[in-house]
Image 1 (cartoon, rainbow, N blue to C red):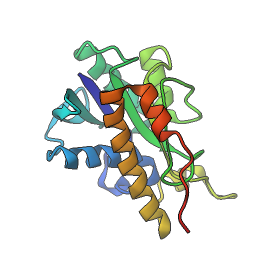
Image 2: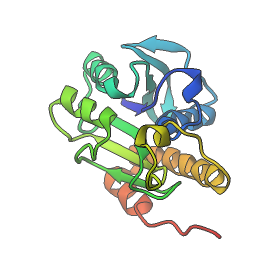
Image 3: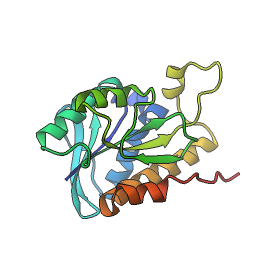
Length: 193
C-alpha cells in the first residue's frame, strides 16, 4: 500500500496556485482512477483505489501547507507504512522550470515549509518525493505572493504537462521502483517555443 500525498492549501482561493501543484497532481490521479476525494482521514481529504496494481490512498492534507507533516505522518502511522518506501509526496518547487519534475528518494527541504514539517514528523528526510517545477520567482517579487499566484499564458500549458508527468511518475515508482522513475523522469525537458 502507498500513501500518495499532494501538498497544498485547502481553501478554494488557492486552487490553481503554484503552491497547490501537489493537489493538482492528486486531481490528475483521481481522474485516471475515475474517483474523487470522498472521505477524510487524519486531517486529510482522501480517496482509495488501485494504481499500477497496488492499493493507494490519495491524500490532500487539510492542515495547510506548513503543517503537512501532521496529516501525512498520522496517515503513515495509522496504516503502519514504512515512510521511506510507501509514502510519495508531491509538491511545488521554484528551483525547476515550469512543468519540469524531479523524483528523489530523500533530500533536504530546500526551503519548502511543507517538506520541513514532514521531515520533522518522520524524524528524517528519507521519503520519496516528486518536485513539480513552478518556475523561478521574478526578481523583486515577494515569494509568498509568487507561490500563491496563478499560472499565466504559456505557463498554464506547461504546468498541465508537468502535472501529467508527475502522475505518470507516481505510477512508474509503484510499478518499476523509484530508481527507474528517477532515470526516466529526471531528464531536462525541452521547452517548446
